[in-house]
Length: 198
Image (cartoon, rainbow, N blue to C red; front, top):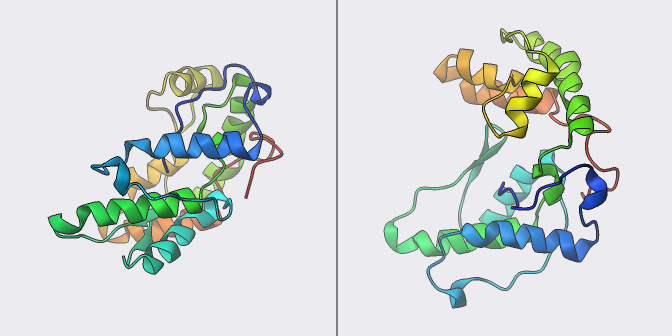
């Protein structure tokens, strides 16, 4: 998922919430795709907003329709290896699918402090115990102030999902991450806008 460049300064009230503005944020986030000429960039319309948990499968299904077999992996997508002469076609298909089936871009914006605290408490009280039930040793969380200081400056911060990457045996990692993302949802109720699309 491509994070948009916009930042929420204080709370979600400062973020645009109409479909056109949100979709424009999606398209701006996709401008970094290495499509060599503007005329190669496909004209795309929003087909439907998808929930974060549905995004990877929606992309895989769309990519298959575009002629590229990909798979879901670790909560994201594994795209096929392609010869250099097909690289542009692959990026065009990826652009088309991500623009056709996006998540609400506000899900990728930094949370303001009051919402971030809701998310942090959810990670501590709900996600970490859930991840532990799957056999992962989750590290002790810091205080909220320490966590938020790192989070707000985009530095590495405590995250129970990251403990899966650090501790899982390489041969078991993909299957374990799939179970973690399926059984331990990442987003706290109340941390994100009530009108999230999808």
